[in-house]
Amino acid sequence: MNKLLLKSSILVSLLHVSSGVMAEGSVQHFGQSTQHVAQSATHSAKAVGNSVVGVTKLVSGVVAIPFKGLEAVGSLSETVGDFLWENASGNVELDVSEETVTAGPAPFLNNETLVIANN
Amino acid sequence: MCLKSFHIILVFLFCCLAHSSSFAGSRQAMETDAIPSYELAPFAKKIEKYAASKGARVFLIARLGSPKSELPENIEFTHVGLAVYSEIKTSTGEVLMGYAIHNLYQNANDLNVSNLIIDYPLDFFMGAAELKAGIIIPKLQLQKKLLASLASGVNKVLHNANYSVIANPYLSSYQNCTEHILDILFSSIYGIDDVAQIKANERAYFKAQEIKISPLKRMLAPMLSREISTSDHQGQIQTATFSTIAKFLNDYALAESSVVIDNSGVHLLGN
Image (cartoon, rainbow over all chains, first blue to last red; front, side):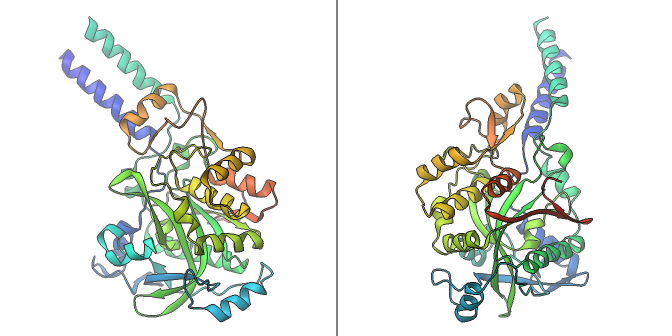
């Protein structure tokens, strides 16, 4: 009986220390969550891209290039980006698309996303 | 008799721990209490639109991943990333305008290891305990420097994959998400990528957050959790936080604004 009590005390104490000290830190949630989003939107786990949550359209992002088209990153918007950047006063309103972009499944499950992350 | 004494000691320790402040909540509880996507998506878009309305090309963004009540004193946010105004090419070939977020995330299968990941505001807020975001918009000149740093891959050069939740920002033994952003900031401000010089500058000009943790937790935590290391701390535990970065940027006139956005509106950080 004493041994049982002892073991359970140790277990409870250790569990408490472990859970109590752990911070959320920077755990990545998007892998599980985009699947959850897709489930919310379509009741299916397979579709992540182009689904809808409430009135929000979700699309899957493949690559993101900073708008000031820097050579080292890419050149999607070289001309317009440079012009806007050089003339920016810091408070000029920028356009944001209405679609909500998601990163797709976790990178260790999806090679495409892993490549993006390592670019 | 010996066992009985040991049991009493354990019960005592348990009671002590129950009353000491926890660092954060468990992930399981977080998932159970997860904010539904139909609330997160418009909130994430609201954050994007706020930043865009201020003309922010690059800004610091933070989320609260655990209930505030479970965090140590003065910890307002638990994860920080760098949001960059971008052209986003989608899987269907569309090009959208919005923010991509450059993060240091823990490896889900190996919590003491991190990876650099680019995601988007909705992804960023998944797992948040509250619909609450921290935003620091740097001065335009600093935004340009930050963007140049990302373009030249400085974030990869400065990445240290050895992760600790309470990494000491003054040393390079471990790095967490916030310290990673701090290192990019210092690298961009000074135009350097030498880690030793960056750390020297941080020791000189950046004041980290002291974390109050009981001696027992401090001793046992590294044994019980791979994401916590205390070996890089002498004396008081100190780590970089969103709030201490905001203070640093404000003190040196490097921030345009620092705010918290929640469902009740936009508030100045610290108010």
